[in-house]
Image (cartoon, rainbow, N blue to C red):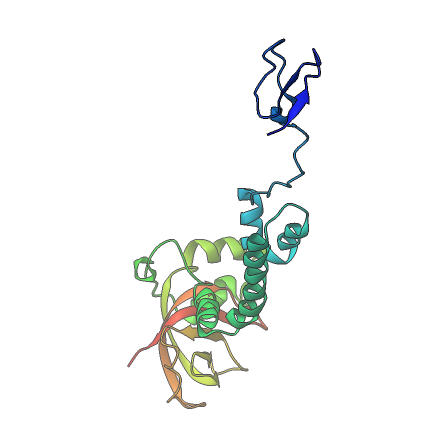
Amino acid sequence: MALIACYECSKEISDTAQSCPGCGAPVKSTIKTVGPRPYQPAHRMVSLQLFLGMVVLAPVCVWFLLRKGYSTQSRVIGFGWLVLYLFLGPLSSHSPDSKLVTSTANSTTYSSSRPVEQYPESTATYAQVNAEVGCKSSYSNQKKDDIFKAKYKDHWMTWSGQIALLESDEVSLNVDHIGTQDLQVDFADKQAGYNLSKGSELKVRFLMKSAGGCFLPFGGREATVVR
């Protein structure tokens, strides 16, 4: 313990005293010095928009984590996700599932608003249809289109002819046995043409989809072989 002079009244007092007994002034040694606190940068929180951006557009949005204020943990997680994004992206394009999605999309190209069996049945022969809307027709193209849409398109038909072109999933027939192909159809069963032979006679039931002309055959789908 030591004696010090009071800064107000100059009376000697103990340096351990809280205040001067004479004037009541606080002893300087007991006054805590209050100064500015050292700067401590606050960590930024990853916003919802930035988080969603990193999930969807990782190569672009992850770089925002390099700005000041983001924690090391946030940067590690963000750039770790970027590595996974870049690594898994090319793999998914070659996965069996992606091929399945592609094949499914292709298989639904001809999808319609109702089951194919609910379409009406037509007994019209190739000669009748060709005379009205095909190469033998004398009507204008506009009238032929209207007749085809009203009477033949999306109707079940059964025609027979000689196989001109053949794949496992489709066949082209020379129906009138003049020239080349008059009808091209896709099989409902993609392997239905596997055991067929070119040049042989074939009868098919099919759903009419497109009109033919002097150069293009009539087109159909969902074809089945009639025994």
